[in-house]
Length: 253
Image (tube, rainbow, N blue to C red; front, side, top):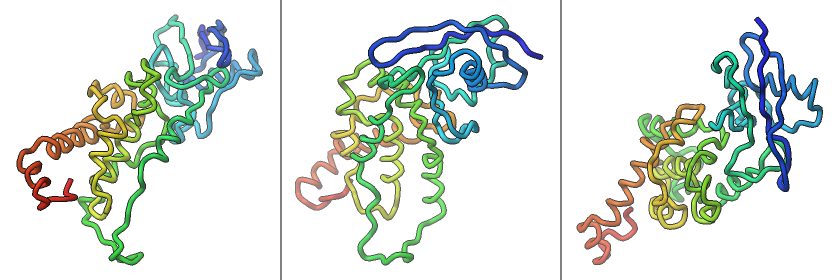
């Protein structure tokens, strides 16, 4: 059964903008992205919105709905009480291009700063072998669709623009964690780099990134906390410290 909904949609660009009120019809089973498309087709022909698969797998339609970072294609209209106004705004942590479209290039720059997998020189292509348990350990992190909701909600960059230079964010901490637990990766100082170059120590473990992840990746519990523990182990364990000084454990991290 159709019902009328009041939407407040942010319109504008990098220089100026504000919320515009609009009334739209919503049908049973529809998602917020359906409403945006209906508004775009009938009332705001120049409304800018990024989307692609409409199946929760491309991460394109990331935006903030009633203040919470969400995928518009996975947010059911029925989840909002009758009569509630729905406010739709662009991702707050990134610069606005137009309307609901933001410039997320920050994330791609951070991706380029993380060294890729380093294959053992002693193994020719096709010779590498891994235990199944090692394969499964990082599979959870590979579910990431790069919607960047975790990056948007993280208070380290959401509230502090100046931190972007030294903070990679949750999405890239799971990338570093995935490579760090790879048994064949030859780059052995990923934990230190995460701490010293990518701002791992700035994370306060609020778990807000885990809460907004549409793929239900346990970012904090399975990636960030274990990596923090290993950093502390390397940096403050007296036996490891002594071993590094007498060069018996050089390169072991």
